[in-house]
Length: 335
Image (cartoon, rainbow, N blue to C red):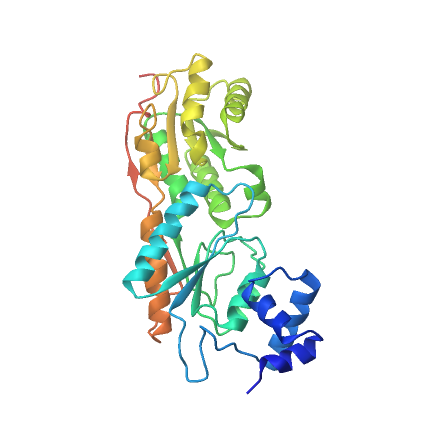
């Protein structure tokens, strides 16, 4: 059996440094940590303390990898995390939260040390750099999000492409002929985050199908960003009467910004959103919305992981169908 001293010898460090590098209990330089991780992989070392020991013991811990990158909306992430923790406790598991944007390194550390039995991965990109590691390791995983090539992976998510289509279909049925998508912050699209890109595809595809005039604009958060995008839309698309928002913090600020420009919701402008139901329902003008079912997605991800740990078969990709709830923010064009 490979010992920690063997890893230390291969990496050229002390056994205590190996322990700290693997546990994260003390700061270790990136160069040293990478040497230790390389030695762990080469030697096939598995830590016993709290992990899966030689007798097959399990840690009873699930890891939740949710890098807190720029453009991530923390309240929504918190909803996902709470649902994962609640579901995990129902299966007698604790949850290890991985929030650093370290990507492969963080997942590799979990896989190499046995800190967790399995991992749930969030903020999935279309070409996510973490996927080769997930495919090559024995650590069971579930993605909340669907990459461009999901073969060999277990994924669950809202069908964001269908959600974008559903919002446009609703506006088209009400007679709106010019629509705009106020999207996530620009960095979310730069990272090619899967859910944001797919919603854009659904929005533009439905707009083309209905032969609508359309525009897509990423947007930051805050009242100044809302005022800027509202002013730009009114200038560049004067026939605009329908807006889809995929940016939770902007819902109320956008309503205010359009009204400051003399446009009433829904008299002059119908507004829909893809966001958690409480955000839409509590807006100053309750907003017609497609709900992001964070609680259901987190719970399903845990159930899929538990099935994988038991050796039971699981589906490759599960897409939850979107459901639109009509509220006061939409009305027929010209009403």
